[in-house]
Length: 104
Image 1 (spheres, one colour):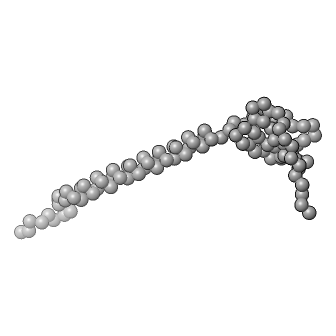
Image 2 (cartoon, one colour):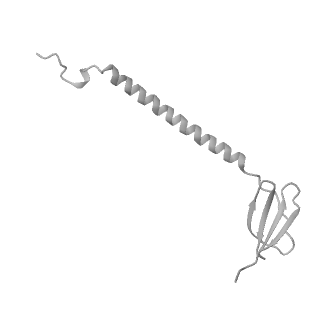
Image 3 (spheres, helix red, strand yellow):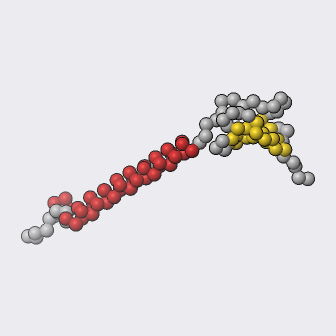
């Protein structure tokens, strides 16, 4: 008769194998938590980085907007007449008008 167990279920698990299994489980949990923390930091910083849109933009008569962009203290509207209208964010006043010239 042999002293070795007949099936693997009866064999005791070596201590170093048990330690490695626990270590891998802990490292997996830490890695998942770290990844979630990085995603949370990115989402929070993205939300805080955006400037709010103005409630209303008053364009000069006859102007039709085709595009919009914004900076920290200004926003700009591109019109169908190939002009860029730059407005002050705080007051809503027109700061500057730039004419776009087409190269032919």
